[in-house]
Length: 124
Image (spheres, helix red, strand yellow):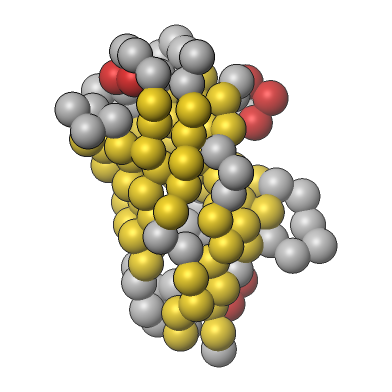
């Protein structure tokens, strides 16, 4: 069983940066792939990125490539999402999720454990 808690959301101006954290409880966290998803206002939840258990492999949505970076501290059971050059269209509730296995899935149904989400608002 894994419990996830996101933090670090807030209000930022376009062009600014934020770092989100996803803190996990439970054992063997390093064996889980972690994905970040977001739900923009009035839209469906969408894939942002995924990071392997070791942190050495990542997969990014085209919309965030070269602006967002994932990393993880397995000793501290935390995954980070560094968001740079933020745009108003990045406004959303951001969720982290975890799944076992090694595939960096972009499909949210593959993820078993979910956090409660954190709001990110980018003003123009």
